[in-house]
Image (cartoon, rainbow, N blue to C red):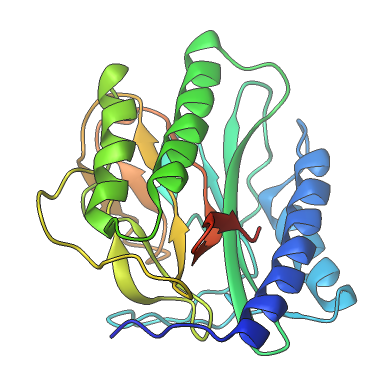
Length: 254
């Protein structure tokens, strides 16, 4: 069931979203060869607390999971699509790393992600990042009153198909605000007719996850229980904003 947010709640989400954006800006500046993903996670948690909020992912246990997520930040390196668990991995020149996190501020949650270059990256990876970001904004631009979540997926897929990229069909965007994951599901591919109708007060994430190899096949790491890898070993990129649907059009909160 889709739960719309009140004007007061949306104002809180705007404040929290701005803080989350600043946190991700700071983390992005930290990304360089020699830094570990664990160091990024520790910095993320400290900044969230300093901004008066909570690292809501830490200890979060999604339905069907046997273990709670152990960190404040997801760090997804190269062929990890999403939900990468920060460890002692040392970032290397040429890596790409997805930074994805949720921030709880005054009881309301925002969610955002970006994939960042570690030093100088290949032309192929630069294109992957650029196209994934473009796909996200194509989805956001489509998120107007009267359209549906399936229209968002269609817009995202149009961009990725132009470049031969794939997307994992088992993953997508979602509602957010009261919880980390709420209805509705927001696909990254054309699911045909249907989907949730977009109405004012709806708060959702638009988050394309593109796979360079053109496949949709992924698998979850059996050891940490969270890191989702591309099955063909090719690199993946992920960009995400939390948005609110308004009469004047979609508004980015993060």
